[in-house]
Image (tube, rainbow, N blue to C red):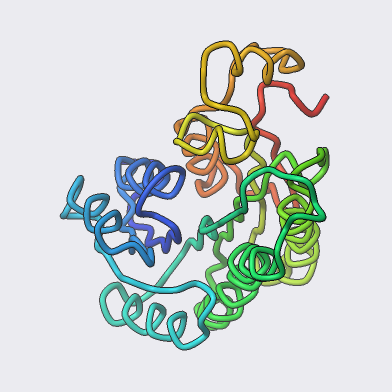
Amino acid sequence: MGRLEGKVAIVTGAGSGFGAGISTAFAAEGCRVLVCDINEVGGKATAKTNPLLLSFHKMDVTKAVDWKATMDMAMQQFGKVDILVNNAGTSYRNKQTVEVTEEEFQKTFDVNVKGVYLGCNAWIPQAIDRKEGGVIINIASVGATRPRPGLVWYNASKGAVWNATKGLASEYGPHQIRVNSICPLVTGTGLFSHFTGMEDTPENRQKFIFNVPMGRIGEVDDVSSACVFMASSEAKFITGVNLEVDGGRCI
């Protein structure tokens, strides 16, 4: 028996990076997963890794109509959704704040904050109706609590997720719905340059990790393993927590 045997999850942004890793890790623990992404190629590739438990559904997390279609499909296909992982996220490239365009600002908040808002609104009613509780996991960032120059509005968007996680946990705890967030350090998912503003070289990685006690950047399975734990019954009394998965960076 897997740690998530018999459970059903929706994972957004599951066509690559954390989302793909979370989806495959959940499936390895017996969970059926609706792999959701606006990127059809990436999403289908993730689903193909375990076609018995992973199903792809194309969606845009910033559209309420897409969330309704996603929940309708999940309910028709599985009859329930126990776990929601709000992983889809975006950012502009690290640069001076006054150079961030209004379009970049809007897209960052639409995906990172509005996407979580719409996802929770779509998922929570069926969880309440089923009276069996459930789990929401939001993917935030170490930047939510330790912001640094160059990604001010990205960090602010993740700060909103960090705050909302605690508020949701308080509001829906009486329904046995647990809400937690994972706050990762930058990982080697191809976005090192995007987030740090430096070319991804061994020398630049050393510059970035000088204040990381464990001496490295993150890895996808650091995050996916934390998500498996938070989604499982092992974390049945943990809610409202923003878990820093950062090798000690935020100490």
